[in-house]
Length: 220
Ligand code: ADP
Ligand code: ZN
Image (cartoon, rainbow, N blue to C red):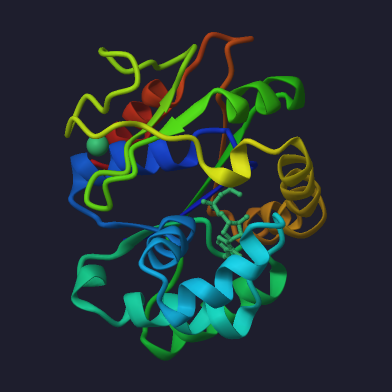
């Protein structure tokens, strides 16, 4: 099963994807996490990607697409995959369809998470992540704090704030790109009848965990 997570920054895509992944065994691929790991290790891919990520811009397709294809063709994707952070543009979505068609596969479900704009900025600023590459759990200081201040519940690593989450400029830049380039994909997948939109917000007191559990129930 091939699932795509959509939704602006801070809506909880990674969290929802993680819960679905744990429950179904389908692996989660977060392009942002892959880039951050490569940046940390200073690989050629990481050095190239960081030129864009630090500014809140999209990494070019000639870097991003081959990287994703590599994972799609790996053992990791043998039972399907949950894509978190890809596709992000119409070009990437079309490319993905092409790649999947060549392999006799297709996108089965697109989960679109929505959160009111005013809540989003607050959620990004209070987001903290576990930097341990084999954990990467995301927390929120207000909505989903770790049990011990500043420490990951799952692996004990000290939590950090992502560099692009601490600058208002980079956050606004990313949200703008989302509106202009990524949001049109909602329509692209809606036309195909595979879109599932869910609001995640304190306004209606509905957190990512509940949404994930409902989706898992429907998948079984
Ligand atoms: P966010 O959704 O909060 O911006 P991500 O972890 O998904 O964070 O991505 C971090 C950064 O990695 C993005 O701002 C962008 O620069 C880059 N990136 C991730 N996925 C893609 C993609 N599919 N295409 C281009 N750039 C990407
Ligand atoms: Zn951890």
